[in-house]
Length: 157
Image (cartoon, rainbow, N blue to C red; front, side, top):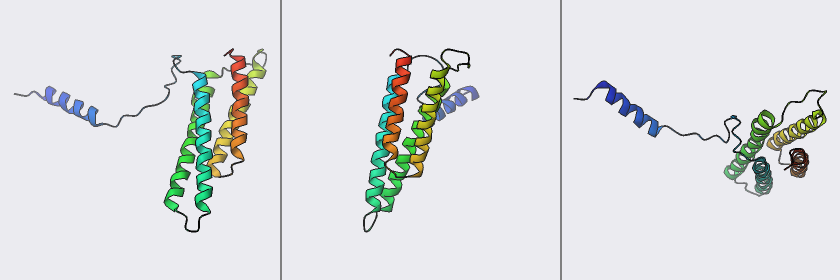
């Protein structure tokens, strides 16, 4: 004879197996297993994907009979990757890696420079959601490079 406890355990196990799994890139626990240089590479890859998406949108839009389904797919792709840039900038660098410095701290100027660069990257990512202007891409890359150069020189990487 089955007990209600065994039935409940079996049901819970089946629901656990069938439930969709989500995987997040970071849990905001300072475990130290993620590498800053990898985050910069990921940001650069997202910028490249946005550039490709913009190029495809512009090309498809100029056709005599544009394939609107493909255009929508590229627009969605562009926006997803712009959001991923904002997530890395915010949840990884701003929340975890850039330490708050008071005005009287000798790291204050560096802190402000990092904040400005990361804010610019986030804003340019937002602008790339709103546009297919390829002039945003070099600006994003340059800002990312400036941030990376400053950040890694500061952290002795």
